[in-house]
Image (tube, rainbow, N blue to C red; front, top):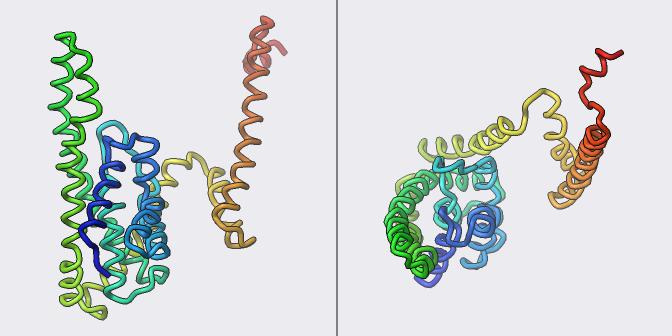
Length: 285
């Protein structure tokens, strides 16, 4: 399996669209095309192996499932994880002859994702730093009343930032990744200590992603119940991801309607001049 220059260029374009600050926007670019689960499909189509791309993307998605970008704080940027890590992981799996769905295949995929995640952080801050130059040009245009120049600042100049910090690194690393992977294969045999360590660490990385997600969504002990419902449905009933999502959507609608009933009742009580404070009601009683 190899990556041609055309394939590397296409991967570079998608890296630009998915990077933050995103050329493809936050909703479509970073939070859709940039997610490893979606990028796995894209990389699979580009490299001609859709099943492997999806399996590798799914493995990396679990690691970065709780990734958020609050303000300017970024722990890992998905442009590198999705469009450098996934292609290189696919190359490595093909070179070692590993099944992407196997335990060792998943461990290797997550390890590659973790390695390039740090690179993505560097690329993010590089992009943001270069964009400061364009912002300065924009402020100068506003001060002079040249508002039409803002189109240039918003829609044209940022491509230079992404060309430097997204397109070129992705193209170079994907194209030159083949000999690097072959060197790793020759230097680190499958039964060696280094590869065994890599597989061990890689197999634990999904647990880190799940743990971070739990820390964000679980505030009390009872919050574990809805969290594990999906796993229970998948393991006990045999539902797939789409079916579990539909069930979760139903419960979300029920929860929303219950919340709205409470809000409307409170609004009605306040509109009638009453009080909706439980403490006041208890004192009156």
